[in-house]
Length: 304
Length: 269
Image 1 (tube, rainbow over the protein chains, first blue to last red):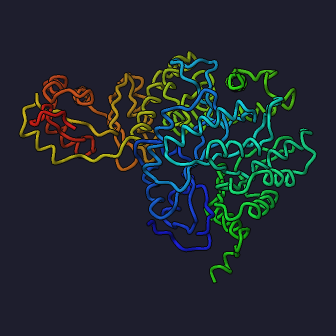
Image 2: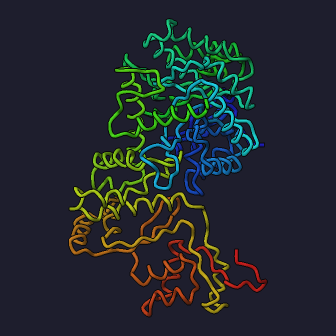
Image 3: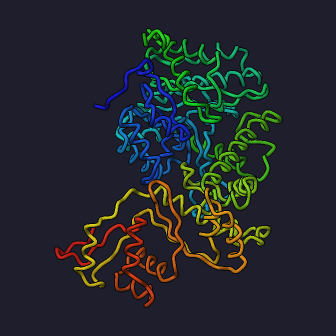
């Protein structure tokens, strides 16, 4: 049994731990329900980053969140990537393993010198078609079989879309994925809001962003969500971008409260990747998430 | 059939992302005109930013020598000509030295490619498996003849030989470098004083040590798994084994000594 520091955030709320915070983290070991890291940052055979992660794991649950499996790639999974992930899962014994409903691999020009597919290192949007579903289910199944555990699959923010006659609505697509593959969903509520902003702006939706995002939440079956992501986004008035570079905005908090009411006490992550602020800012956001949860109390009150 | 349609749709977007200029249309995708340009532009810009961050992190020596903007430009160009193959960006970029060597406008700085090689050797060293020196095994040096013994280097040891003074150029860019370090490195470049280096972790960070040619030849032979006798022959008569052993223990280069023919008949582990 791992020792877990007591504290108001030791409910199921966590933060994404990134390299600039490693030293301060090691010194403070703040009370949190879990810590999430990007799996690929710990694929090395050894070295400092892996040692840091083992140190984190000594006191906290760790959620391994991937950005590179490219689960929706028609070209299939990279065996090397899956091998590295499996090794990391064995090393860390994470509380959850997740990646995205996206693609990134494909055999296109410029051709690989060895014929190997390229990897775009991005979370590229997939079509919500039966063909995509078959691809995603096969790839998710392969990952789950290799890891011997169920994974979570995250919805994207997307800046391009597919206009296919056989496309289904995204919630239906994701719910079917979960039912067929046995995975659960990592529901990124900021991504819902970003997509809703852009859809309204493009004239693809007449709904206000918060209402549209709440409608998405309501369209998912109960029990299918295994984690929420909360983050900030950038919006220049033309295109909203999910940059994880600011505080969680009021619109996302509103959708979070709605999602908690529907799905209950689901683990929740504060995600911040660009323009990283001091660790205390992330912890304050985590406190805010605690307050939103069933029975959540403000930190001062909880500490009294 | 529907899976094949998705494969084609994905290939269209990937081609649009890695093309020199963004395409005017993306068959299979919904957006058109200005909206397509914005959406595709967001992904292309993200790719460029990822490439810049990846090489800036991997190549600090190169960035110090060339300037951050120049390394960023190289990163964007390499991204499109030799895209990543893996979803782990630490695996991308090792073709940069060859890419630099092929850039005619960089001919006035012929040492840059090897400086990039050194940066990547440092990255590999810092990501290598953790290992200590098996000091007990070193007793075999006194027990076994050199033709029956092999010395294993630690996994974080990287060897690199250059026609340019890469250790001096690297050292001149480090915090706390002597005030005249860069001047001396420049002089060594003018004189084409090549350097051979050993990269190995000291704690979590890799250290770069310039070594004499016999030492380099010796360590190359060890890295190739040759016997102690063969490695001594490669090092030549000027090689000082006791002196090297002290240096190797001090720097943590040594993994272990192992017999080539195990008395029990098995392969050494």
